[in-house]
Length: 175
Image 1 (cartoon, rainbow, N blue to C red):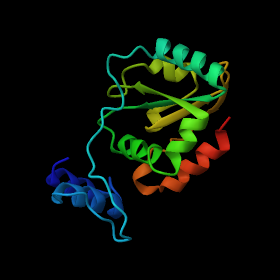
Image 2 (image 1 turned 90 degrees about the horizontal axis):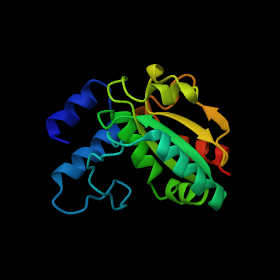
Image 3 (image 1 turned 135 degrees about the vertical axis):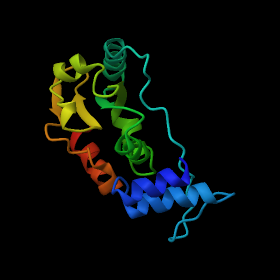
């Protein structure tokens, strides 16, 4: 992410100061940056999270089959790579606290929604109103039963939330 984009996102409120600082630190440092707490931080690199050519129906079916075999739940993650909040959720999913929770209890299926114009039938099937904001999540049991769907865009402002919010969500819905 270019510094100009980071500053623009921070000024317009799309990023919290802490996330903006981490992005700037990662962009400016030649080596691995260190946080104010002395912890090593990896530079931010925009991730390709939501494959545009994926088949969500087939992906969900494969995830459910794997979830049954491994006694896990499935998280449907609706969003787009253009979405800064989706990128922040991805970072939080992969931090040192949440990554082990996900590995033990969940299979994540990223579902590309384009510019709110793709795979909307899948979102509707799982009662996820993506028009209220993304990322938007649904949780299924291993047999495909809907256990939870975001109704009010709870994670639509990940930039203002902490990793702890994701940890609480995962602990609530883990298998």
